[in-house]
Image 1 (cartoon, rainbow, N blue to C red):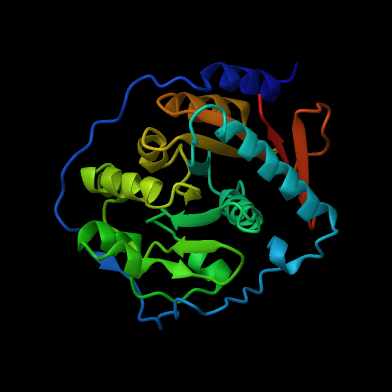
Image 2 (image 1 turned 120 degrees about the vertical axis):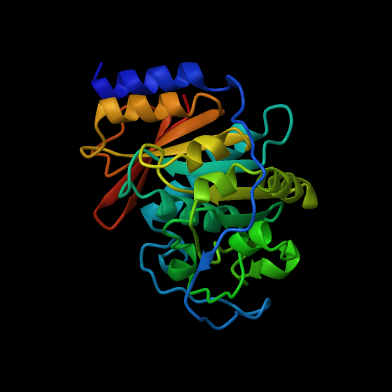
Length: 280
């Protein structure tokens, strides 16, 4: 058994356990840093050009089929008992492909007839969801938390299936403190309850350099952890998983994986990259 496989086995033992919650704090408004942009009309059909997005690939290609498999695994894991519809997507370090994984999963899920999908850009250090989708929004998550901006006004209806996006809206001076606040907890509760059939995906910062993922992981129903094979070190993986012990680890998604040797793994390939998910 390889060192990565041992780390995955350890992760499976952590799945479903909640070892406590991160203390929440009340904070004052933080300074938003953003460039002037033009708002997107709520009914405008976005046409993102990123070739790595599944909507820009042939529906019969392997990549789109593999994301459908990943979607099916997520549906199965989140429908056991109560509907666990709030999910966090993170990684150990930058460069693992967490944002692209969150985007493609959200896009694939949004094509379901039974579900709407909300993708929240909770990376308040280096947000990129709006850039990849071609969204130009004046307000976002940052303003909902610091200014009390109405959530319904910040949501962007993309016109792509049933996908709705809550952009980051800018960067924050201290995002960890902001996302640990009671206001963030209340916002997640509102997003969870607003539509009972909606999945809410949160793309956030990597675990090891920053505290945000560890904080948010205790507030959502489940965590998808993205690893880049041949780049992610086993000690980094184990350290990151240990930092997420307060949350519910649903599975590990591998990028740039050479092969799949287990029927519980699903490979996603786009360009020269591959992704494998383990539902252990």
